[in-house]
Image 1 (tube, rainbow, N blue to C red):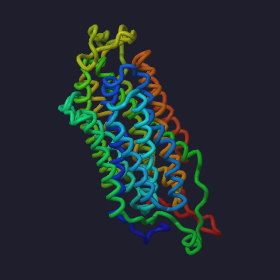
Image 2: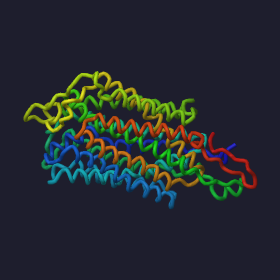
Image 3: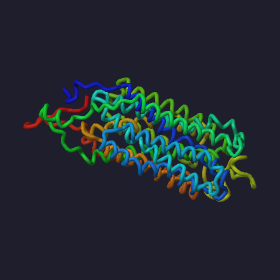
Image 4: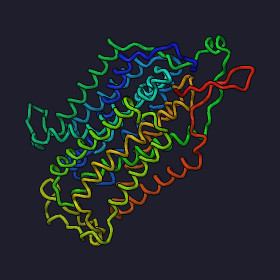
Length: 468
């Protein structure tokens, strides 16, 4: 028996919530593979270190706004207005990104544009709150897995959208002072997508919180919702952080990495990595759907996360530049840029003693290991976090959960681009492997505490589980 056994999930509104999480994922990642070519082509003073800050700017914006949107929901019990406000702010940031060619100091304007977008798409916190609080216990895993699947599909599909427009080229078409090329058309498309999201939620979305046990219901059923397990909740936040950190590193590093490994020019690295990411995304979303629609979702969430972390560790093992791989790497021909040819920049001295991961292994790791690993950590961790919190208002805590997911790419993009520039990708792999091993250790040590909160029956020691 559950406290909310007579309530029903409003699936029409939940599907809108899932779609909007897809939109947020697209807005965050759409430039990950094309950002460096766009930036370096417009502003020659920008270096790879600065790219790390540009990538981080969106996540910094999310980090600031995530708890604010969560707190807004906590106080008003509204999802609609935080989400609409966020998408309008994101639309301004995306429009700014498309107009960068009109500005001086392009690198700083790009950083500001991505920061604004981040402030807007921090509204994912409110959407996650809705998925957790508007679903009954028996529907929660399905709602969160489909929502996570929507976000993952958007996050993975974003760079694919950039790849689709590569035939427009870097020159594109000029209409007065505006340039429609492979970079700017994508930005304008993102503006339209934000506006469409506002339209959908305003006219078709209904707010219903069937996952909460209200004070009146607690008195009627003679139950109380106890304090949640703080260490268990923090572990879920850490797991969510490291999976986002690893995903950011894999996607952001794909273009510069394949440029030095396989001598691909910018457009080739965007195109081929886009195809690989599309296939990987399809695998991830397939597992997300399976988690929500089949018995896979009923498997213990702790075991699911250990399974996913194992595949992430396999990715690191195969992508490490072992001595038995071929090498060293080639350097860019003198006087040429990565828009024309591939290879290492002259200052990348580490290329002299770095080996080349075989291309079939690179694609297998990107498509299979990444595609399988991601949904088995990204989906169970927020579902378990919601269950650990129990049937209470979750706005503030979900805001902090989303903050963790936004802070991770900040750390990842700044550290990994700096490490890559000065020492190569060897130590990026080592850093990722350490964070993943810590995650495995935390699950094993706190295994018995990573369980759903139990609602306590007043006047007795009996409990009523919120897990179905």
